[in-house]
Amino acid sequence: MAGKQCMTRLQKEYKSLLKDPVPHITAHPSPSNLLEWHFVLEGAKGTEYEGGVYHGKLTFPAEYPFKPPSIALFTPNGRFATNTKLCLSMTDYHPESWNPMWSVGTILTGLLSFMYDTQATTGSITTSRAEKERLAAESLAFNAKNPTFRKLFPAWIEELTRRTAAAAQPAATQQAPAQQAQQAQANGLVHANAQANGAHGDAGAQNGGAVLFGAGRQDGGGEPQQGQAGGRGGAAPGRGLGNTVVTLAVVVAVLAAVWVSSGSSSGGALWQSLFSQGAAGGGHTGPR
Image (cartoon, rainbow, N blue to C red; front, side, top):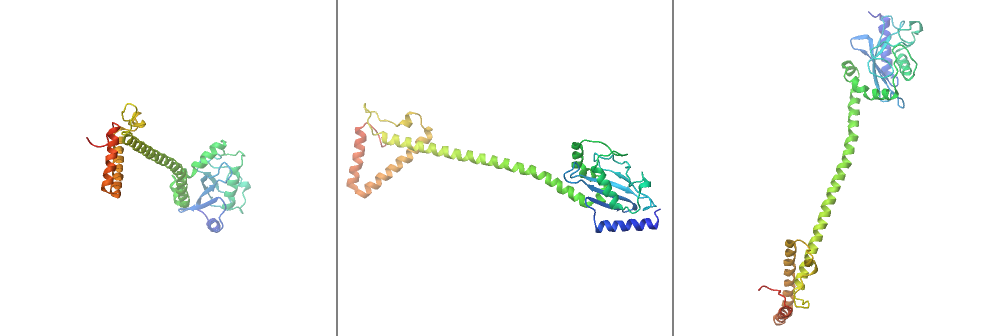
């Protein structure tokens, strides 16, 4: 069992950490055991540990601060083996180099500094930079599986949710331009079809006019010409016939207006003139 001096010292250090947090370091004692502390080290930007969140444990002896604690890491990191006591100057591997003035903050600061180094020691491992970066990217999701981590570090669980949402956002952003491009392509096809239909309609109207006004012409032998478009096939037969009917109706309406404005006698003469010209040309402009 820890002595009073040990308990008082650890409580004081915890209050100090809460008041003045150490950069890139978070630590909390276990709710059931003040001699067991859990900590989190954040990988610094610009290093192979950037984005990494490394969970570990400090185990203090009952004689603390006169004897050093042991240190172990739980999160795979590529620098230290997991669930293994580390040999450092501020751990129980070297009680002779321990300084009672050191605190939890200084211990974890020394651990983080040694993590960025490449010096070998008991508990250290050697991996590539790419492997360390991969482990850093996966570290927070790995920690979230640990019940103790979830209980003591809820802010990091919220950070995991934020990172997951941020990672999913670029995928949705990439899909949006693709959908817009598809919609634009569809709109372009609709516009092109509308223009094509308009062109066919205009061609049909022209063909209809050629049929109507070309029927009264003589071509040498007296056969009425049906227009160039009709001779070449032009638009679809159904569409050309419909346009011809419309054009014929317009012409009839115009002639009727002329007849009304010029009087019945002159209007009748106009009708007779038109029909006589058609008869002379061998054409047929009215019903049989």
